Amino acid sequence: MEWDIKEIKSFCPTESFDLVVANPPYRNSGRERAIGTSACHEKTAVLEDFFAAACYALHSRGRFALVQLPERFMESVELAIKYNLQPKKLQWVHASVDKPAWIFLLEMVKNGSYGLEVLPPLIMYNEDGTLTEQAKKQMEKE
Image (cartoon, rainbow, N blue to C red):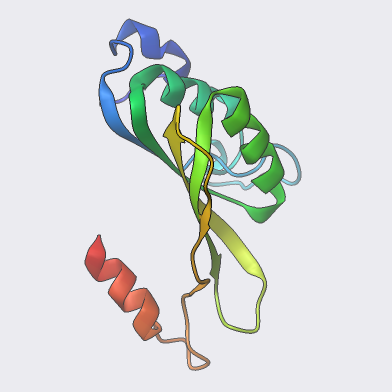
């Protein structure tokens, strides 16, 4: 299905989902890409729109899973609090062991209680560019 997330109330009943997963555009500023601009930059929706939609769509105790850039971590936590989505699991993802995290994975629970589990970092690539065993195992789960 293709639809505008800001129009969620017109195609989705409230509190009708157990799980919402979002990989929203990462960038709200900076140099724009020539290709894939709307996938990478907030052209038609902002990060808050995804939190608002998740809050609307999830029933109480439903889960919201998000992937986002580290520089937007605090904004994501603030939006989670605003929309009553309690952070429950956090994992930082690194390209390699010697590089800083390039994204984070955050799972939240609507109307959840306090208690954040910080998972071990996910390291994607070995020095030779091959996938780590950890990354392979993660992909097998999906």
